[in-house]
Amino acid sequence: MELYDVTVIGGGPVGLFGATMAGLHGMKVKVIESLPELGGQLYALYPEKPIYDVAGFPSIMAKDLAGALVAQMMRFKPMVCLSESVLSIEEHGSALTHEFVLNTTKGSHRSRSVLIAIGLGSFVPRRLPALGADRFEGDGVHYFVPALAHFAGHRVAVVGGGDTAVDWALAIAQYARHVHLIHRRDEFRAQEESLRQIDSADNITVHTFAEVAEILGSQTVEALRLSKLESDSEELLPVDAVVGGLGFQPNLGPAKTWGLDLKGSGLVVSLATMSTNRAGIYAVGDVAHYDGKVKLIATGFGEVGIALARIRTYLHPELKGLPHSTNVKSLRQG
Image (tube, rainbow, N blue to C red; front, top):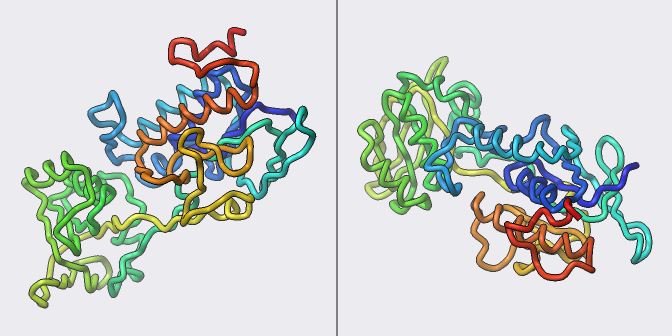
């Protein structure tokens, strides 16, 4: 088994950028991803969803951001292992020859350090608690959204009040005849600019203090029975499709058995170093937990910079000071 400087667990956006930064630091890098392709949620869950919070891009499709991150990473020729899940992380050797052995569903891998970037873990959508939702799931009720052209000319209901629901409503509205955004409260947890676009869109109607009580139809979705929470009344809303934007239930899976401190669905890290309670193992992105954590792609990118600077020192304690963006290639050149 070949020994790598750092193994990145997770091939989503933050993991991809982590592999890029490790390559810039001159490290020998391996990436292990459980899905059959790189990109994580960007590619697997919402490839056509616009992303608004990445520096330098007013808006970029999720699949395009994933493609750019993959291309950026591949310049450094990391070893990439797809459709492979890490089951355990063991430690071997002495203080001078310390290394990790990552046991997976396909074999074992040796690494001097580990960077965990598994996001929310496995993707389990929060399903709509409405009557009829199970009946039409995958055929009119969607949690993993198909190509947006699928909704061309349709009347679509999007349920939820966070960034996921609001962004989907905006994206689908570019194709659909009309979009109904349904939220059980009157306050949304989405970005202000996205909400401004919702307000100015001619073909989006916002329903607040409302819940989907039932999804109706014979062979396909034909209407919603909408429960109006303030007036204790109901409304029949003709629609052709329903998109559940209630987010995903985090499931860390085997990561819960890796001997790492947990807080809720996250791995506890030091904000100063992104290190876990096991020396040489770091966590970044949505899976990393610390007080005040904000779960954004941009936040994860910043955490990568902190983690890789510390991994650099961990692997090469003789190096003094932290790297700057203008000298980050020092290891590769030395």
